[in-house]
Amino acid sequence: METGSIPPQSTGQPSAQGAGNDTETRSGSIISADFETFLKMLTTQMENQDPLNPVDAGEYASQLAMFSSVEQQVLTNDLLKDMTTKITDNAFQAMASWIGNEALAEAPVRFNGAPITLRPAFADGAESAKLVVRDAEGNVVRTMPLDMSQTVVSWAGTDGDGATVPDGIYAFTVESYIGGELSGTDNVQAYNPILEVRQQGDAILLTLSDGTEVNSLDVTALRSGSTE
Image 1 (tube, rainbow, N blue to C red):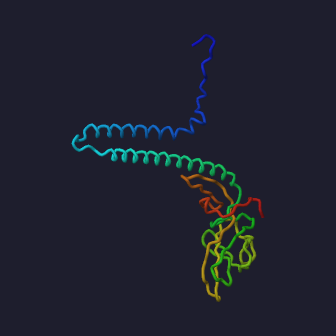
Image 2: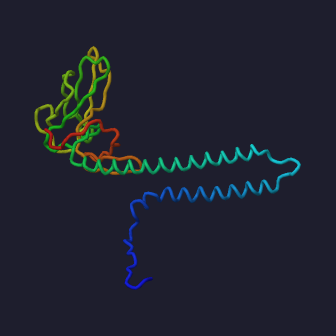
Image 3: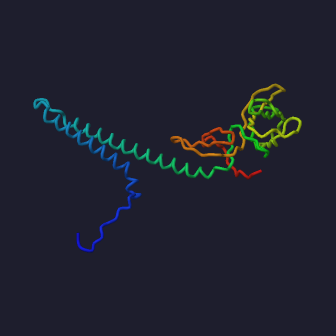
């Protein structure tokens, strides 16, 4: 080393390009090793073939083509896996900003004094419908008729006598009627505060106010938690 020269300093961390090429480098090394093994086997096969009955050259070409196809498939699978991981990580980081907002999903909601907004669905052919509210023990605390022309319903947290119910977890269903007869009961989607966003494998799970975890793909709408 020349006098006065300064040796390069290591940062202790891999470069972004080096980190991004890890998967490609590992796959390339594995495929290279496999290809060398394949060539050795092919060479041995050629050296030990029967001179009076040699293997057709077309068969060698076919084997080489087959290995090339497998090689490309391995590289493609690794590339797709790497892309999926990056997409999932980006989606998880973006959904972290959902915390504090309200997701529309089929799950019970914790009532804390603020009205709860619902989006009921009705059975096909229903002529009338009722909203049924149950507490955490499954007891019916309120039954109220619904205007089927309204797509959004608000429950103020009151029972059948108009008294405010205690804070707690409440579930909602819609009973649909045809000719005065019950034709179906369906769960109701409600706007539910998001408390946590969690990644599990390729899935991103949202923890709602009642402790329920729902897949982010099952959320059909999102709004600010301050909306009322």
